[in-house]
Image (cartoon, rainbow, N blue to C red; front, side, top):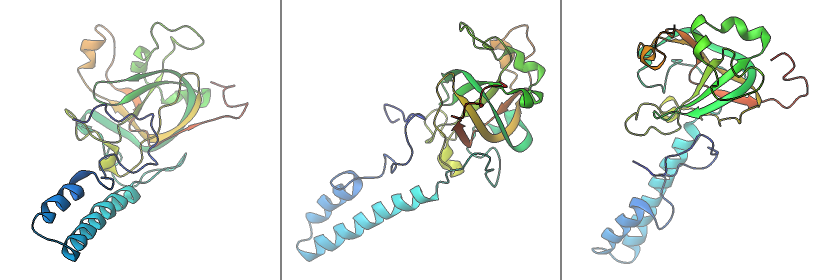
Length: 230
């Protein structure tokens, strides 16, 4: 397990951390092994081949990840990259909404949970169970009101949830916004059917709260009118 774990807050414009740099990783070790039995041009040729294969593979991997724009829907299976996808019921393969970020929390499974106070025009997407999605311990407008859950999955899968990975779905996971930001989010609109939520919120209706999971794009809005109707 890599430590510290990769953070969704970091930029993904860089080449993956597990892509070896010159003088590092398995190409360097391979060169040392080859060098024991070969000399001169043979060693140079072997090292060149190893370096091309390593860096070429990293570049191909990096180019294969798509960076989705606001409102752009990802083709293919909407729950690709989500672990245990059977717990989520897909209502719409792709939905774009906007609102105010009232709280952000990192979960043990690697996801970043955002509680989004939807703009008035999008509040029809809330379900009764979203009433438990509040920002406890926080003050301010709307902190105790129902929120839509937005989930950012990690870029790279980590134990014990290696399937929870945007890499597997071939897209660049968005950065987590800060609290108080007005954002626009695009991703699958789903209902979380996980019965274990009854243990977390005893005595409350929790089944089938609404989420966007996973988020394919999160765009922070900077225009002055952005938050007027939230």
